[in-house]
Amino acid sequence: MAAVGPGQLSDSALSSIRALATDLPAVWSAPSTTPADRQRVARLLLDRVVVTVDKGSERVDVALHWVGGAVRSHTLTRPVKAYARHSDYPHLVDRVRALCAERRSSRDIAQQLKRRRVPTAQAGRVVYPEMARRLTIVLGLSRRARHGSRAGLGADEYRPMELARRLGVRPRCGPRWVRSGYVHARRDADAHHVIWADADELERLRGLSTQCALPRTRENSARLAELQKPKPRPT
Image (cartoon, rainbow, N blue to C red; front, side):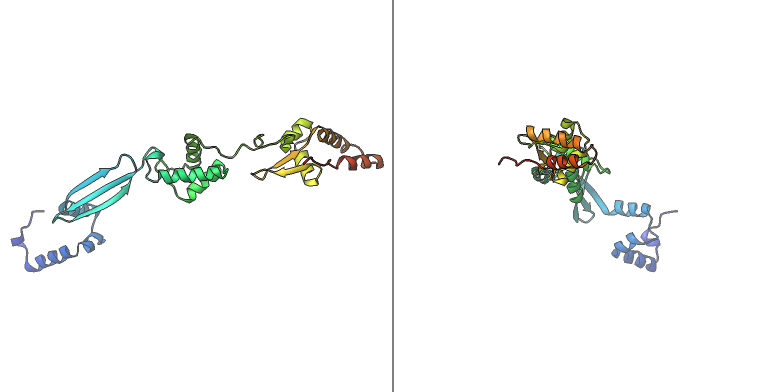
């Protein structure tokens, strides 16, 4: 199509063009305006675009210089490959430290980070469990001790599974003895049971596991009732 100069347009056509120019948002949003049309409009109205990338964070500042001297600034977020480059990293570290101080597991920490919508280092992927595990390792933080470890146990104290292995009985015996009151037990900071049993109590529990397998005669029942009573624990 040949170019048409202003002198070749009728007064009504010029008036229509001027009316559209004063209502650019309507032209931009009109259903008949194609993406290619919007690109042409932007090229005509934009003088230059200045992009400033903060290499120490995910922040990108964009300044749009329009024809006529107007300048509009915008801030964008770009994906980064390191958690330490996030602008929210100090707050993230403080949050992880606080959760570790509460003896939270990596799973709990990951759920907290996801609930706060903390951005992950890999764009488009939610890797909160991996983020929590790596952060605690990098920061040198300790989380909840592995269930079944001897951390926090006193003298003659056992985890139920550990006690069952020592006595050579079924693993379910420990929890059953706790429920039945056959042993002295307490709960640790993570609400797991800890059983106290000195040498005498270990011998009693061996007899209890053996007596339970015997026929329920009067003699055996009396001996079983005796074995079910734990001795007083020293203060």
